[in-house]
Length: 143
Image (cartoon, rainbow, N blue to C red):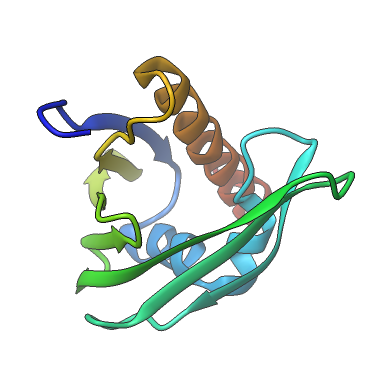
């Protein structure tokens, strides 16, 4: 959506940036948290974590009624600080991992798309990031 400011979402997880990074980028972890609501899931994820490497996460309704591949190419891989994904539709999504207190602030700034309202996109991406934070807390005991 040309001329529209990027959308920013964030969460704080109670782990180091390195641990936050691993939970965000490892395929087996992505399949555990990459959904906006319980009626969706991510049955598979593929990550070639290098600049120019491909990212693919399959997202599907649990009832099998609809699904899509969330795909892109990594433009920046600066572990464990920042990660930029150029989505196949040309939009950019950049996630940073910044130490904060005894944890890490995870912030994603992404270009909105034209098909859906900004607030709907913000809510959906935030729900996925909240699912990520819950996954980190459940696997590490940190909140």
